[in-house]
Length: 327
Image 1 (spheres, rainbow, N blue to C red):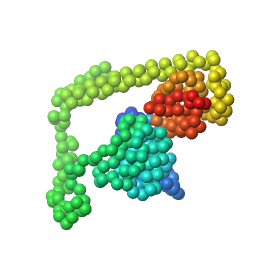
Image 2: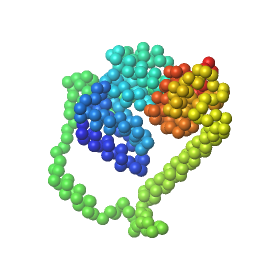
Image 3: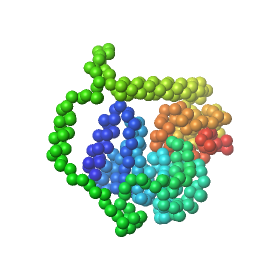
Image 4: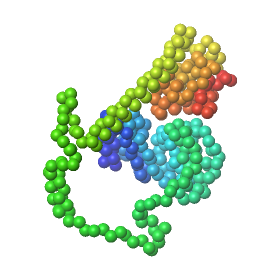
């Protein structure tokens, strides 16, 4: 466990270039269990923080486990995509039900729950309401690599023959290659460009062009997002002279006044004020998050939406959010 803690903590902070990376954690209940005791706390916090904040550093996480009920619920609700195979135990199905409810996921919930105990081997449901926008039953193709699955091959298991290798000879050959001239890797003497050394190998040039192309594409995407953010801010700032954020909206009902006082200046209160200031308008989650200054994938932002849904002051249908007209 200490090794995993050190690895995750170190990996999070060294990925300063935001290079997309992904971690697969097998037997996830060993690292983020329901009950966290003693020295387990460090590892639990490292995995939990990576799941919640890793996306800010370009890091994705996949948790793999036999039973959903044995994974910590606070961690389970932070995941964006659910891939569920056959689940017989009622506790596991209840954990999956809580995941769906926490994400306000839309789909044939009854079909999903009823099919879980009897799904054939290799078939499962993928439910990704925000990230991929899909909900469907899928089938995993048969593996093509060697695997000692005795249930399939019985007594016919034959381990592949492995040739004996002289490790010392291998090390000596490797050392010779490491010190040999790099012919075939760099085809000409490195040139200089603006005081920088530039390798002229075609592969290096291609990699550099790909990098510059990707960088330009990302800059265009950032520019488009900044334009959307400016538009939303203009809407919010344009109504500032009619109602201060610390006051209720002129058109707010007595019920809205009570909820505004309850939520105060919390994230839920900010979202509610924005919806009240635009009673006839619908927003996407992305627009709301930008308007109030939160990440759309942040757990706190989702909790704010959950509070507003529970209070029945907000309505979300088909990915569109608006103030409850009955408020």
